[in-house]
Image (cartoon, rainbow, N blue to C red):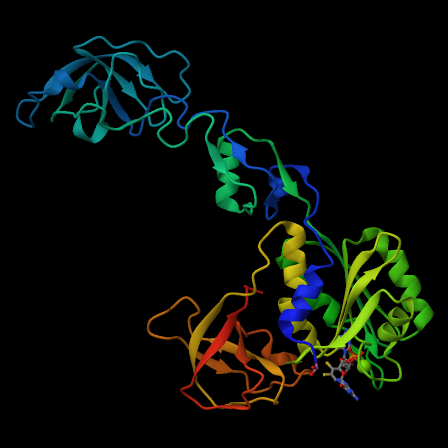
Length: 408
Ligand SMILES: Nc1nc2c(c(=O)[nH]1)N[C@H]1C(S)=C(S)[C@@H](COP(=O)(O)OP(=O)(O)OC[C@H]3O[C@@H](n4cnc5c(N)ncnc54)[C@H](O)[C@@H]3O)O[C@H]1N2
Ligand code: MOO
Ligand SMILES: [Mg+2]
């Protein structure tokens, strides 16, 4: 059997980082910058007030006290957005608002709380330090400075920075278009009546959500039955929408394991067994005229879920221009004993007490139901407890490795 690491490395060989496109700022949310962004402006763009108050000459207030406030004539009113504020000569001041440009001459701002709030003349009850409450041009970002590097994912913080430096569009890696297709004669669309021997189709919904969480555009085709011609025709039709195809089901040893049957005969998809539990039967390769990458995941829902986080995620991240590092892992103390098959690495669904707490060591509780068909533990699991290949038993209190699942 193949190792998990070898399989990931084989999969990454199928894909390269996508060519950049220019996207409108808001559309670029969750995508990755293809080039560094250089600011064409300084931030702040001009000296401005950080308080609602009075723009003054600090030297005028040297003797100001609560008992003997200094009185200054107010000669201007400067709101934010004022294009040409009146210059202020010594002995005079201007009312000024937060974000308004500092008038020429003034070198400090006194917050309104330290004054009587006068609009013709103002009494100020304490001295001001030169530069007090003045936000200096360029103190945050200098014109020409690189504000974000290539490879940065655009989240809300980055979005704010990009807009603040005036970007309307940005060069990013396009969201990978992922086509999700389930196979199985027994499957029924949720919402329809179930017949004998039938089950609701859940894998394509789960994988569509997971791929969306990974910043992809998803086309969920739903499912097809176990008919080879239908499976191939459907896949061919879907290729036009796909940068990656993900299928589930039909890859094991069964007489009707149709994905394996159909794709093996094309010779471009390899079926293999990975030394893990769940997720042992896997297939990968390319199909169609453009050699579109395809990952064929096992049909058991838990196997498909684990396969997504271990195998599909790095492929999507490579396309997106992100590092393909595995899920982050933490050491945790095992709450209850677990068993695991020899020679296969187990990934048990588990609840980690606090994935960010390093000290004290977080505790990890493996779900009670660990069967590949037992979906119920997936919803609350925030970690995958790793039991190494050579280990068959772990006791409560043992220190174990847990992969931290992204919010899902
Ligand atoms: N003789 C052997 N049998 C099996 C082996 C093996 O090594 N020898 N491996 C087992 C393992 S491990 C897995 S995992 C599964 C993989 O099965 P397939 O990928 O072929 O998937 P199916 O046979 O189509 O379905 C398996 C199981 O999952 C349910 N399923 C499938 N698709 C969906 C879906 N979209 N939504 C919900 N549930 C789904 C399906 O009803 C089956 O119960 O093979 C084992 N067998
Ligand atoms: O290896 Mo299968 O993927 O047990 O469930
Ligand atoms: Mg099967």
